[in-house]
Structures are given as C-alpha cells and as structure tokens.
Image 1 (cartoon, helix red, strand yellow):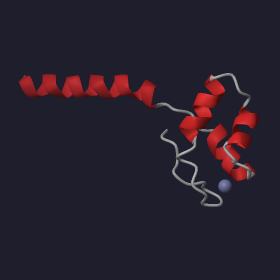
Image 2 (image 1 turned 60 degrees about the horizontal axis):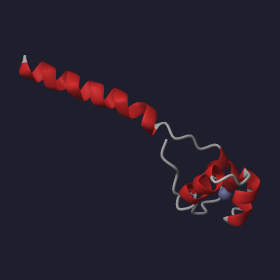
Image 3 (image 1 turned 135 degrees about the horizontal axis):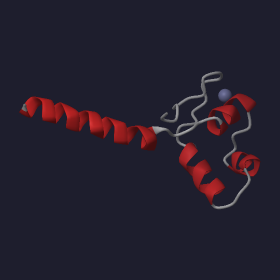
Length: 76
Ligand SMILES: [Zn+2]
C-alpha cells in the first residue's frame, strides 16, 4: 500500500515522514528511536508508520503481465 497522507485517527500529516523513517531504520536505528527522532509521538500515528507495508514492488510484475496479455489479445 502507499503510505496514507494523514493518520486515520487524529488526522496528523504522516505521509511525508515515512521515507525518512524507512531510511533511518535501514541505517540501523531502532524503530522507536526513529519515531522519536521524527517527532511522531501519538500512538495512533506511530501505528500508521509502523504497520505500513509496501506491496507495490510485489504488485508491479502482475500489472505488467496483465498489460502484456492485453497487448497480445489486441494483436490477435
Ligand atoms: Zn494519529
């Protein structure tokens, strides 16, 4: 899923912080420290960032195969 722009519960903007959070965690920082550093303090917002899972990279191959199939059907 794409990162929601706002927290579903409180409406605080979080969409701009996810990439920074991901970079910090990939750099070896613990999740709670990264959330504190980005000043994401409410647990509803922390949940939004922590529970996000990016499935776009897994979905793209299926979308490409469907697109190729449509092209083949149009050629036939
Ligand atoms: Zn929130």
